[in-house]
Structures are given as structure tokens and as C-alpha cells.
Image 1 (cartoon, one colour):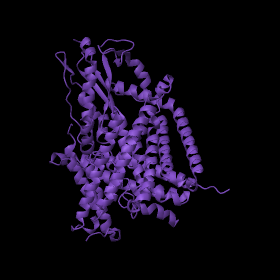
Image 2 (image 1 turned 135 degrees about the vertical axis):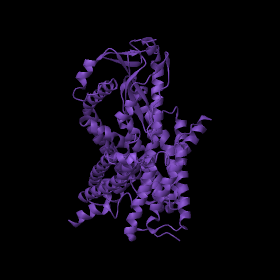
Image 3 (image 1 turned 30 degrees about the vertical axis):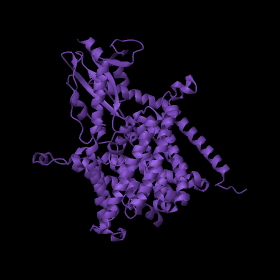
Length: 201
Length: 204
Length: 208
């Protein structure tokens, strides 16, 4: 029986088998890898939060332990800055004093995110940590470097109780990504403003 | 009016070639004559206008986190986004395959002029890139996605026809033998890219 | 032995995928701002091109021609996604660097170009070598471009300061233009110029 590889029947069969094989392969792989990946991602989250709060000697081996040690509380806020069960704004408290808030925004090629750590006075930035999924290495990718992140240390988000926009040096050649970072910070701070006002009026 | 702004922005400010440098391979290799370039540009535009809205629907009703809720509310936690690359690419490849058959039947001269770059439309990073950008930008409806695809395609078309026109004129210039053809195209594209950076900060 | 040499050596010069076949340009612009990402990308593309060439060559007699593009793309995409997911689970730091490139690798025209031009009509071992050779040729160009861009644009190489501080104090400044993608195009143009001046048989003769 000579198979005509261009007959409609064969094409249909081939396509179906290919789809089934690929789908099975990918789904099995993803399902199998998922718990490992989740663990890595959780760890990374802890590392980023701790780094933003100024604890810089954290790495993937001690992240879980250090996080448990230093993260004294975490809760969800609603839009008025009150901790409620169905709030939508997460907040982490480090060493009882530092508030760490997560941020999400858009870079040039894809999403960017970060954590901002604010001191107990509700105004001074203790540190910032940024991450991205697909920015260009060497350009937008520089937002994850110590050099870029450390420029936020010591800046103030509020003056006389009012939110003030944060100024920082953008990355040459990464205009869109830098703008994305600024927009992300400004928008996030607006959402958390009620909380910081309550913290220190 | 919003759609028009989106269109203008996709053609000039978010130009696939000069702002994001996507779709370079076929852009540089096929731009020897204006006629072939226009043909390829139209093919790319066609593929974009079809694939971006289709991928938008696929993303909305299948891939995004919680997208499957319309089948059964219990499926709202399923997140199939890891299948994004494969599904988008498969849809793009299917459209390109159909396009290749159509071009081979109706304009065989264009088919042989484009050569290997016709099937390469499927891997044209501009096409996958456009769908991926669409996924991120969260358009409100299919119409916006279609306009975005159309604008990006026309931007690409303008870029490739532009450089083809320049290259045709260049045949009468004294270019060093080593730079003729592909070499000078690279340099010109680089210069055009620097020029287009002027559009970068414009907000429409 | 000579075939082995031919498949690996030629793409480094005479049939270089970037400067001669004009493939793989987009990633050439995107990842060459610094040397390290260029190396990572070069290595990844070499591995994926070699493997996908091998797989498609094994399957070549059975692929219906009407869906061949889809089949090729699906194979490449699956391979890249599997590698990416595996790295995310077991080598998270490496995967973070590579995740950025996953999309760029899948649509890298070199991979598709070699599948169409070689793997569909040659045996598995030769296809593997062809993929390896083209990947290396591509990596070579990436490294050259990234070398100049990082050196002249940031004064560093692989992150290490190379241009001495004394130069900066004397008034030397990093060429910021080098960091931007258009410069990569110009550098490749110059490489092509040099290559074709040394090998006149590669020149295009379309001047009037």
C-alpha cells in the first residue's frame, strides 16, 4: 500500500497526530516542571522583597529562612488603606517597620514589575527592586542592576503629607522602559497613598 | 477617532522596522526592487490583518488566565498562556501556507522573486511580535486589534518600499564594490533607523 | 572528514547566515548591546538550529508539503518551549537570561531558513552539522558586533571595565550611539564590506 503523502486523508491524520504528540509533550512537561518552577518563583519573590528592604545578603538558599525571619506581617489593603480580607493591594512588613509594596507596569517589549520599600515614616524610600520579562539586555534590562536601583534609596515619596512625583535618572537608550518604570511607580504610589497617609499623617 | 489615532501611531511611531527593528531579514534581502518589495509588503500586511484579530480572539477566549470561564465557570482558574507561542505561530504558519499557495497560483513571477522569503514570512519576527504586543496591550475589542495589525503592516510596507526605492536609485551611484547590494542596505537602514528615532517620544 | 569541515567551516565565512544569506538580523540587533547576552543567544541558536535540523531531517520523508511550514514551526517552537520550561525549573538564573530570547529564537529566520533549504533534502547527520555550522557562523557575527558595541558604547567587555579610567579623565566619552540598535546595522554593513573586499567573488554586480 503506497501512502500518498499529499492526500487529504494523510494530511489530516498527520496533523492530528502532530497536534496530539505536541500537546501531550508540552502539557506533561509543564505539569511536571510546574512545582519546581513555582518554588523558584516564590523564592525569587522573597529575594526581591528582602533586597528592596535593604537585606542584600539573601540568595536562593537562605531566602525562605530569611523571609520568615524578617517578614513580620503581610496583608491586603483596600482602596482606603485599611487591611481587609478581600483587599486587592498586597503589603509586606519587614522587621515591623518597613512597608514593601509590589508594582506592575509595562516596559518596551513586555511587563515589568518591582518592589518599593518605604520606611516607617511613610515617606523615605529604603530601597527599590525591579524585574522584567523581556526587556533588551544592556538597555531596558539595566533596571535590574544595583546601579539603577540604588538611586532610589533615600528619596522621598511624600512632602508635607502630599505625594510627590519621584525623579530618577533614566537609562540611555531605554527611554520607553524608563518611562514605564516612572509610570509604574507613580501609579502604584497613588493606589497606596491612603495607607501611607494613615501610617504617618 | 481613537481608531484613527491607533492607526497613525502603528504606522509611524510604533513602526515595526524602525522603532522595534522587527522583520529585518526579509526587509533587507527582498528590497532590491520596488515591485517585489511592494508585493512582500502587501503579503505581510495581509497576514497581519488576519492573524492579529484571530490571535486576539484566541487569546481572549482560550489562552489568558481565566479565559476558559465561558465554557464552564469551574475552568476559570486554568491558565493556558504557556501555549501562547505555539498557538500564535501555528495560526500564523497556517495563514502563510495558504497565502503561499494563492501567490503561487495567481502570480508565479512574484512567487519566484520572493523565493525562500515567502515561507519565511511565517517566522517574520514582525508578525509574531505584532501578535505578542497585541496580547500585552490589552485592546478592548477585535476591531482595535485589526486596526493595529493593519497599521503595523502598512508601516512595514512603507519601510520596505522606501528602502527599495533608495536602492533602485543607488544603482546609479558610485559605491565601492564591496558595499554594493546588501552591504550598503545595512548602512542605509541604520541611518534611517537613527532618523526615525525622532518619532519615538510622540504621544498621539 | 571533508564534508564535516565543509558544513561547519563554510558558514563561518563563505555562506555566513548573517552577512551572506541575510538571516537572523533581528536578534543581531537586539542582543548585541553587550557581549554576554550575545554569547548566550549565539549558543542557544546553535543548539536549537542543530537539533531542529536533525529532527526535521528524520521526519522529512513523511511531511505533507501542504502543511510543511506549520510542521517545521511547531517542531521548533516545541523544542524551544521545552528547553525554556526545563531551565525555569532546574536552572532558574540561566532561564531568566534566556526567557527574554525565547520569542526571538523561535522566529529566528536562520532556523527556518536552514530547515527549508537543507534539512528537508538531506540526511539527519549532515543536517545536524549544517545546523551547527550555521549557528556558529551566526554566533561569530554576533560576537564581533557585540564586542564593538559594548567596548565603544560602554567601555566594558563582559561587564568588566576595559577602557582605563585615565582615558575618561582625559576627555574620552563612551559613544552612546553604539548602544542603540541602528549602529549594529552599520557595523554589520562594514563587516560585509570587509568580507567582500577580501573575497571579490562574493560581490553583487548590479551597478549600471
